[in-house]
Structures are given as C-alpha cells and as structure tokens.
Amino acid sequence: MKPTGKEVDPKDRAFGRHVQRLRKERGLTQQQLAARLQKTSSWMSQVERGVQPVERIDVLQDLADALGVSVQQLRPGAPLPSAANGNVPQPSYRSNDLEEARKLISGHPAIGTLLGAVRPTPRRSLGELEPEVEAMWRATHEGNFADVSSRLTDLLPDLEQTVRIVGEDRRPEAYLLLARTYQALAAAFVRQDEADAAWVAADRAIWAAEESGDPLHVGAGVFRMVQAFVRLKRLSQAEHAACTAIEALQAIDAQGKLAVEGMSVLGSLHLALALVHARAAQRAEARDELAKARALAQRIGEDRNDFNLEFGATNVEIQAVSTAVELGDAGEALDIGREINAEALSPERRGRLLMDLGRAHAQRRHTGEALACLLRAEELTPETVRTHVAARKAIRELVLVEGASAPPELTALAERADALE
Image (cartoon, rainbow, N blue to C red; front, side, top):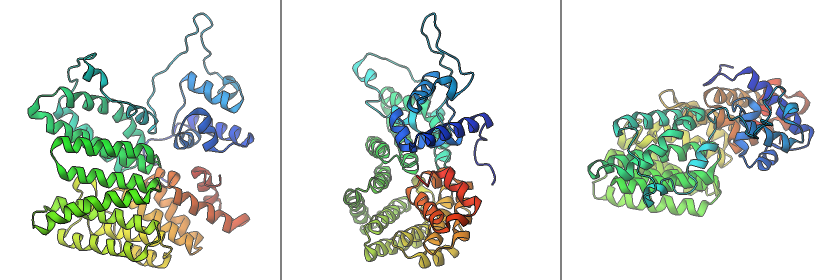
C-alpha cells in the first residue's frame, strides 16, 4: 500500500503496538481505555497505529496508570518527574487528531476580549488568514486531520479575536472567514465520527455566516449540521433542519433569483435529506430527494465546489451509491458505481465512493472485491475507513464470513480499523 500523508515514525508505530498489546492483555476495548483517559476513541486508535505520538510525560503517566503499568514499562527510557521541584518536562508537540480542536471550541472562545480583560491586537491580517482557511479546507478534503488540527491551533483563536476587534468595514469579511473555518471543522469532526463536536462547530458556522451577511453560507452551515445530526442518529432533527433550509431556498428559486451557488447549496441539502430518509428506511422519499438533486445538477451543468460542497452530477451519483447501500440495494449501488468517474473530485469524495462500493460488495459477500475497494479507500483517506462506523461493520462482517480462511490483507485491515472489537 502506498503511504498516505505524513510517514509514521517507526518508533511511534512500535509504541502503538506495545500499547495495543497491553490493552488487549487487560481485556479492554479502545473505547474503554479512551474513556479512562477522557480521550476519544479516534485518539486512542491513532496512538495504537503510531499516527498520534505520545510525548508528554503527563499523558504517558495517565496512559500507564490506565493500563496498570509504570511509565518505564510503558516506554523504557521515558523521563521521570524531577525529584527536586516536582516539575514535569513538557516537550512541545501538536496533536495529530482533533482532540485539541475539541478543547478550542469548549466554552466561549473570546470572553477575555468581551470583558475587557484582554485587549489584543491582530497578529495577522485578514489577507494572511485567508490562505490559512483555504489550506485548512484542502486538508479536510484530503482527510489529513493532523494538518487540520495543526493549523486550527493558531487559526481559530486568531479569527475569534479578529472578528471582535477589526474595523466595521472589514468585519463581514472576517466573519465569513470564521464561518468557513467552522464549516471545515464541522466536516472534519463528522469524518472522525465526533458528531457532538461537529454539531457545535456547525452551529457556530451558521452564527458567523449570519454575522457576515452571507445567507448562502448559512445554508452551507445547515448542511454541516444535518450531517452531524445524522451521525448522532437524530434523524427528526436532521430532517427538520434540512427541510427548513430547502423550503427557503426553493422559495427564492421559484422567483428566479437563486444564483448557481445557491443551487449548489440546495442540491447538497437534497442529498443530505436523501441520506436521512435512507437511514430511516424511507425508500421512496430518499429516491425523490435524489431526483431533485439530479435535476439541480443538470441545471448547473458542471461539477462545482461552491462552499466546499463539491456539488454536481458526479457527487449526486456518489450519494446515490451511498443511499442504495443504506437501503440494502447492493446491486443497484454497484451498477451506479461502475458508471462514475470521480477523479476530478477530492480524495474524500473518491474515498467515500470506494468505501461504499466496498460495503456493497460486502453485502453481496464478494470478499475479494470488497477488500480491494476498502484498501483503495484507505490509501486515499485512511480515516474514512478506520473511523466510519459502517465501514468498520462491513470489515467485521467480512472477517466473520471468511473465518479461518480470511485473507491476511483483510485481517490486517480489521486490525488497523479495530473492526473486531
């Protein structure tokens, strides 16, 4: 398999395997160990795969305590706390998942500025911040959450301060950058199956977009919120949010005043609503929403990326594959998938298509084809396969079906995705 993103340090990989071995010896699942540490399951998964380095001695100590071993047993040669003054060395590092991002959006982001306790001046201009927002979106589309987390650490505090102290003439521009940042963060949280955090980020994206005076960005924020609701299995809330936005956009469209960018938002919301209906096993309703999205894609006439929604005819068919899989129509999903050329879309969209085709093959008990699709999806966007509940379920079912004759590549994939727990 070709490496994806940043190469994993062999020492971090070895440490992760050691942690995994200790965890399994104690009969703990990743979720149980993560709960002891007050971390997320995705953080724990990345530690065990070597993607998330563990360098701080306090985190090492917590992990050792949770596993019932000493720090030296966990990592031989790790520095011990100073006996003289009790200080603990704190090497600098950046988290490789979105754990730090969760902390950043906890509480009010700029209460010191509002209360007058802090009177900062902008560290960077809006012209300097905009490329950072674009880079964060690229990392999100690529599934590179290490880069998302790294960029957000400085970007989000800067933007939250800037919108409160920038001149009135630049304030809409600043709020729009903040809205786009929160939209990207919501998308990343959804893809790491951190739906509660995605809800918070999407809500803030909607607020910032309203403050910017750009109502279509409000609609894009609603799309991100619908995705969060679906992951949280709050289908009635997802349906309400999507339908409210759709009705408003349709009213504008009926007046002939909906720009092509608005059609992208409207079409994306129809796709989101199709997923909601599919999850609720409402076959006719799901197909109706797909038909409406197809009609809008035909009106637009090209694949676009307005508001980073990647709406167009190709994405509609990708969603049609996903909807068919959700409804158990594996044959239909595979028939649609054979006609799709998604090479012009982001790695995230291509990875999602391959993941869903893998799920469809798994439903048909086509182990070889399912494994090939899932491995190709993992090459493009590892986190899509390793954190998506449906993908992990498909991998687990394939392993159970194959039993002792499971191909070693399948067993290895199941290990990487922790699909057997």
